[in-house]
Image 1 (tube, rainbow, N blue to C red):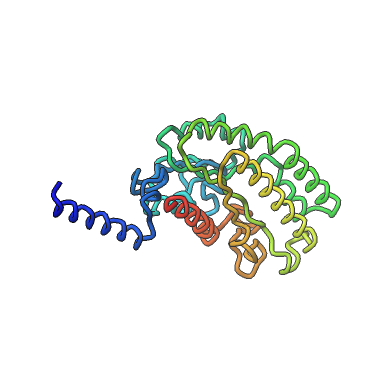
Image 2 (image 1 turned 120 degrees about the vertical axis):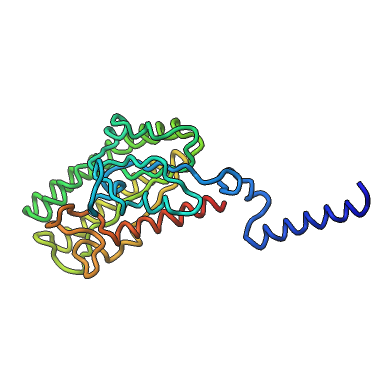
Length: 274
């Protein structure tokens, strides 16, 4: 190579490095496994229960799936391609495993989201007891739900997460939590006093904490949505959770699913840009 050619090659390398630096990229990040530059759009599969299916914002396709779902919104994100949207209203960890949702995963899957666990715990029964029952009925239902969260849910999540990792070994997995459902500062909600609402919110915190620990134990990323939903409970002035007399009680509304998508979008962009 002549001195002139060597000089030209060196100049081109410098220009390329400066371009990457100006865009916030480095040579290492440009070739990282999660980089859209290196691999193209991430093939995305969305699993889970009604909070993942978008239930609460009709119209629905099979399994209560809605175009308002966070998965559909994420599918419009640059660098992400939604290829399998199989979340199903009413799903538990067991029915997710046995009902075919895991068939959406393979070695080409680059991104997985999953919201699951709430239906395993009798959480809906606790909410119903606290809103419409006596104080002792509320306390008993909460205790029963809490017991399931602590004693049976960790093992059920562990089995599920292990199968997700095996089915999609190259995927970045985002485990998505649940919001607190009430804004106790706004007063009573039906027969649920502010104190009972706080107890229900503490139950939601426990559920999220157990899910987060199980996710991290498998190397997955937990996406916490409690902060975005603060003061947007079902009884808030500006609720993002549907109330008890709606067609989908205590599920997110349009604004709620947008908040979910925003939290997940931040997590995806951190991964894609890493």
